[in-house]
Length: 338
Image 1 (cartoon, rainbow, N blue to C red):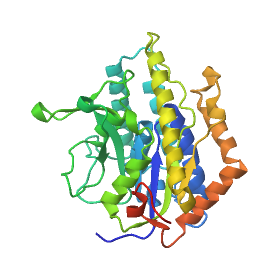
Image 2 (cartoon, helix red, strand yellow):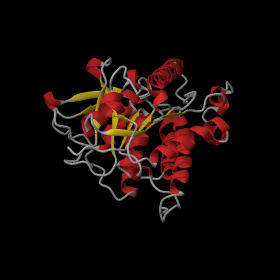
Image 3 (tube, rainbow, N blue to C red):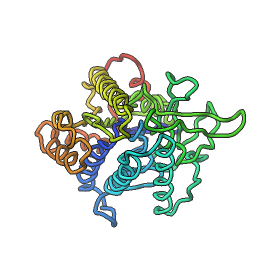
Image 4 (cartoon, rainbow, N blue to C red):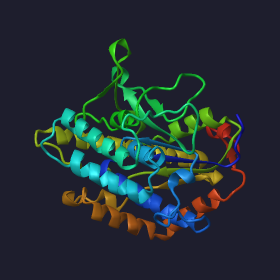
């Protein structure tokens, strides 16, 4: 394994439709990075998979990670795809959990076809190609544990036969809105669901980077993207929305708590950049929480803040360094000396 000297990592929190906020931030970052690169011919922006070495995500953050890496979408393309999924999967109020899962499957299959990819494309390849990615899920038989479904092989276990579509269904399978996802057959059947304990998968990103690149590789940038307040997703009027709201509040709390822990641990090193809209996304006007125009407006306001601009400048600066400030081995320790 050849050790790299400027690893760039990204972590996407789960948060439903507020993933649109994450993608707006990514698009803004791509615009800044494109100033020094040859622009992509299709939209004047370079593509996220061209800049990062590893992207991990949870829930809709995992969906976004797949769209950006396996489907190699721009942030704008991924935004359009996410909104299409919200319209056909999350928004309808008369779908059962299994019907919602099936609707998500159809949306992903159509997205694969539009990109010229087979709908049964495997998630993992025999070798790492371009930007690696993973999604976090939990096995239903042990819902407290978290596992990663990867696009890349690792030495300690054989590559999974899971498909891209199955991986998306699994990481988005938040009960009671979605049904658990069964993969395999016979005694090899596994049931997966969304990972409750890793709404912010930044620790998983660090761990997976160590497996992929080795502890001696140095990190230039660790980007963490939150969704502010996760908002409300419309569901059937049968009481289930109350449970979902509680779940989403728990996810928000866990995400921010994890972000604060990482900031306290490595903030002084200068490689960590956390972006998450707070004030506007916590608005209590329920009718606005699933309005994409409102979400984008709040995000644009957040991006215009002086403090946000300073963090963006640091992020872009880190992308240009030749050697990262800290190794993955150091980053994975509970504490370290800078």
